[in-house]
Image (cartoon, rainbow, N blue to C red; front, side, top):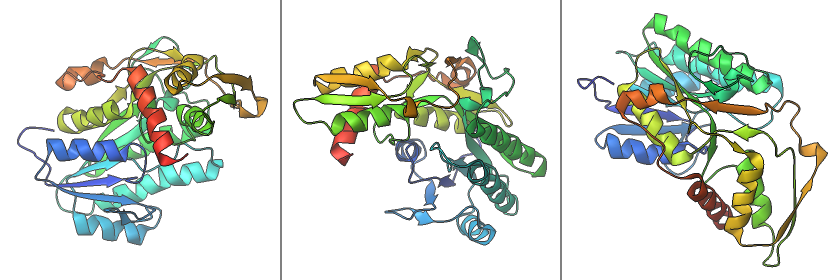
Length: 305
């Protein structure tokens, strides 16, 4: 964000989700004088309930907080029917943008995108790679990006954070490290066995706290209309993710395969380049994977999952 433009009113959607907690801490650190409104379909402490699929609720929310900076994190990474994915990602985004374009000023929106928009892209993927999603989730996120960017022609400033795989404290069991950690946490001191799907795919993992600092950098320094990969720049096999979690647990664990846990479409390898993001303000990943996964397991055990 240009130095002359400092956010006074910030809106965070999807505030009950995995990314929102670390982002809220980062926002408070960077813009301590800004008024922050957090919203989610589910109310909670400090979180205002709003169903973004409801145009009236969304307009009332936006009119009340009049944000000049928005982090749009609302969405789902859990398996959902295709029509629900499109409603949550595309329809809700359009309703939010329609409400934002009606308030005075030019709101700046940072959209939480996904590496799934790239599909099975080979090599070190840059933002110049075509969007060729191979899953319904990826297709809905690609459509969300297109819908959001189209509102630049209606007076909004829109930027896209294309986030790769994420680990760290608070991760839900719908994501692989969270599913592994939940099974490990359920075992007793004697250890036991857990079941997994395909462990051969290689993924680019980044800690959720590094994602939060990247989102703030994109908001603060990104170019209007820009797409920025948020990633570590290296891949690890899913087997290594599991092995590191097992090592952190200190338990003797036998790993079995469950064909029912295999994904219908599993891209063999996906890695991104964060050079464009780093060029903004020097951002780099700071939390090593081994620490991120250890923190993942600790948070899972503390939450009782």
